[in-house]
Amino acid sequence: MAERRATRWLQPRYIFAMVAVVVIATALFTPAGEMGSYYSAITTFSARPYGARGIYEVGERLGWPVERRVTALDTALDSHATYLILAPPAALTAVEVGELLRAVRAGAGALVSPVAGTPLADSLGVGRSPMIAFGSAVVEGADSAGERSARARAVSEAAARAGAFDFFLVTDSATKWSATTLVRIEHDDEEKPAVMSLRVGRGDVVVLSDAGFFRNINTRGGAGSVFAVRLFEWLDPAHDRPLVFDEYHQGFGERQNTPGVIRDALLHTAPGRMFVQLAVAGLILLLAYGVRPIAPVRRRSIERRSPLEHVGALARAYQRAEATRTGTQRLLRGLRRRRPLGATGALDDASYLSLVSTRRPELAADADRVRAALNTPLTATDWVAVGAAIDNIERTIAQ
Image (cartoon, rainbow, N blue to C red; front, top):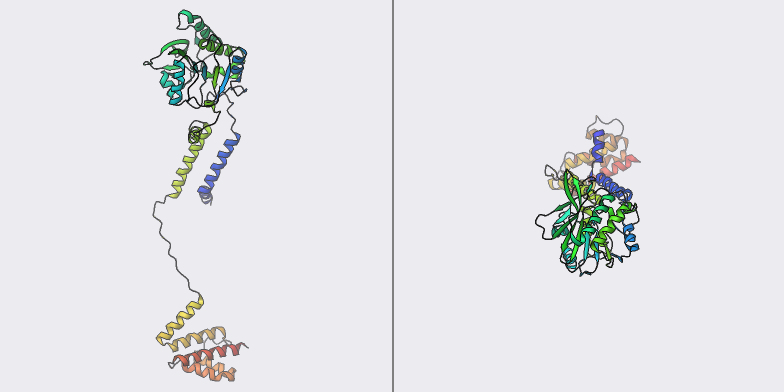
């Protein structure tokens, strides 16, 4: 009994109903990305602990023109601006990377934190490590000389005060850009670059391993804000270039590629990956229940006839065989079953008809006609008369 109940609950309609309940509950009750995740959006629209509105306002208070860009970077960009692309959940496309580097070659600045393997990291030859360094301490000192040495030391000192880095940079030995290491960290008994500046044409690209310093929770204490400002000053010491915060790749603005957005939501977010896994599991379960190890055998369908059809078929069969005596016996048997006249089960047909004549003298002629038909073949017309006689006997006895 228990096995039958378990089998019933494993039917596809119950499984898919439970999957739907789990998905809806997850979508309704999952916290909205403010749990300290390194992969939540660093957006200047958010004043929550893991947003970045604080650094936006700091730049504005210190005299930089600040902007929020909510459109893609796939058109010509202003070469007199500093673009901040802070570990966006959606990676830049190859076209956007080309436009960004074209603006930097013309004199623009950029502060980026690309994950290794993305188009931007591949183009720069530097990307953020895929692994977490778990709070590696900063090693003071910077590889810079000449007129920019003071600003390089300021960046390194501010990074040491801001706190530990949770990522480091992975560099490509074949990179074609002139690189300056601004901040190093100690990880696994080795010094790893954490902040690098690449000279691209007439502009600079600062590659930051840990963009979490721009979050409100880190800038609120002051040290994180100072570190961010030192990076701004490295790119724009004159404070006359707009700071353009890229919000489009943080999830804001209109999206023209709906399938791409759906794909990113399914493959690059935890709820999306969970939904894909549940969908795949449901398809596997449906396949397991839908495929039969043995080909199904078609069930034979036997068409049942109505009683009237049976009577008609039997009458036609008797008529063709001219079986008037057998037909009379069958009719008389039905009469005896319906009108037994007491305990007459031991009497034969002739004795039963004699009893009918004795008890109901007005039926003697009909009884004689039926008795004669039991022994003598009849024509169709005479046999119809026998049927009428049996019918008259039954109706008379029933009165």
